[in-house]
Image (cartoon, rainbow, N blue to C red; front, side, top):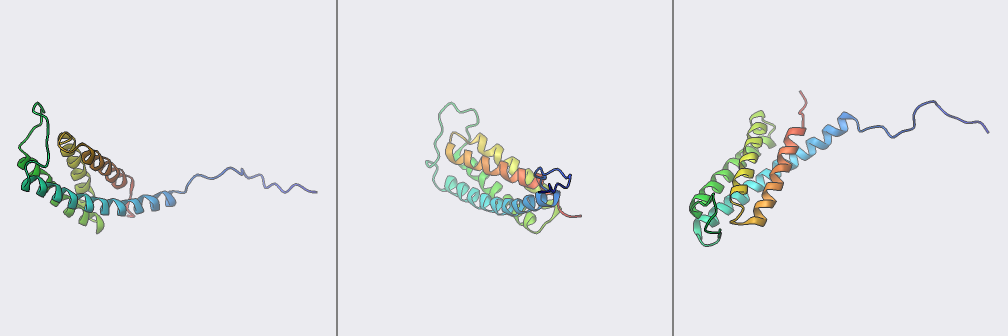
Length: 143
């Protein structure tokens, strides 16, 4: 029997840049929808803090303790801005990409500071915001 070797390395090739970009583009669309959902939920979180001051409770000695109404307005405004940024991201606007990064960072900051009020939810929102930032920064739209 003859050995048919082509002399080409049979190692598994690395992912092509096109494949990497298509994955990142798909994740960016997912990030836009996640940001849209994140904005809607932040609005609901803000409304619940505005309507029921006793819903969120923090210890007496918390450094970043604001009135619950203040946190409600913060989350409400961040939610509205996140919705606008998500729409910009969905339509492929350059300002949408940059604004999405900024609002995701602000959402992380706000949820970190309000951690004692609703810890589990804050951690989920922080994690989702990190995924949004990753997806937006790794995707390079076609020029």
